[in-house]
Length: 183
Image 1 (cartoon, rainbow, N blue to C red):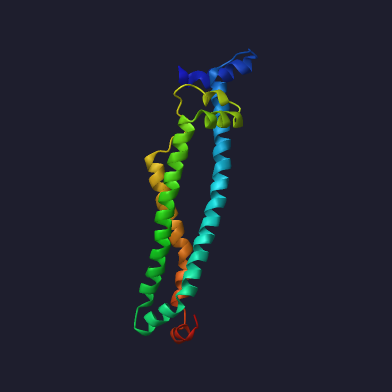
Image 2 (cartoon, rainbow, N blue to C red):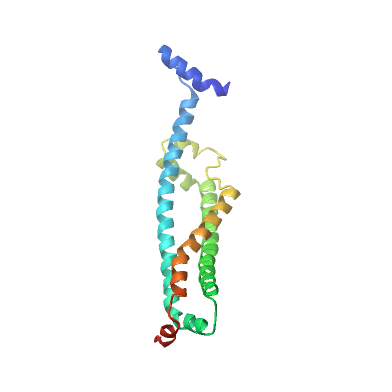
């Protein structure tokens, strides 16, 4: 049974018997894939941090550019919650469209990795078990729809979180000082 291979391998090692099992090759590939996923996850985390800071910076600049507009809204009686929601919505839009663009690029790269031989050779040269990338009809990259949707929702939540401080800052602006500010 395939399920018993690990146990039989351990028993053979304890007895000092030399053996070879394809499961060793499978385990090596699994370790390589885990290492690659950890590396790509680290790069993704850094990219996420940079993106979150960029969104926060974009939102802060939006507040500075619209200081007068915010002051006029406050003087006219706009509630602070509405101003906050306006800026959080803008941050969410950045996340929605940025996440959609990221998913399109990811699916295009995945398709290219599965169909373009030069990319398959490059991926094979990076990993020790490169022959699995060059097999005819092999699917190397798969992006499940649930993962794509979950990532998109996560990106939108990160965008909203990045816009929270700038939105709070917009609600704390002094109405009269904002109206008096020069362009």
